Image (cartoon, rainbow, N blue to C red; front, side):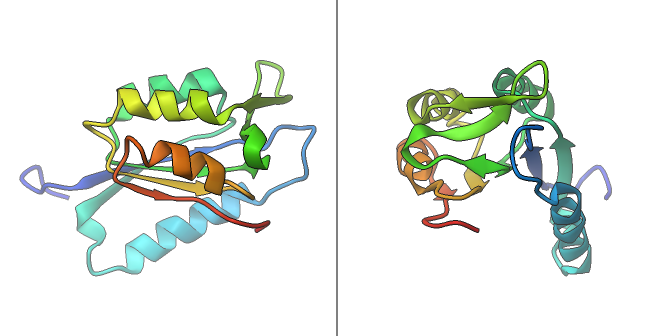
Length: 141
């Protein structure tokens, strides 16, 4: 990628607390990277990642990486929120309003949010109030 190229930054956040069912997050990351590598538009994107994400890490990662697209991979809990990790690696439920409020802070920068988590449509419906493009899941995946 040359320095004159304008590209979109994708930040992939993942969380799979030790007390939850195991997700194959490393495989998902590999599939995303391989898919992008095969794309004719591959030079238009740059991928960064943060694993074992705690709620407080989201803000820092967005500030550090300045992404245009945020992709979360982890567990969803429907109306109750998304599951992140705490300092010990255990699950910490983050409610929908807190998550939407966080993305409101970055509404001038983040263009798209992908929530690859079961039953994340509720969070998507709140986040889309601040971010133009949001994808959530309406069922278990």
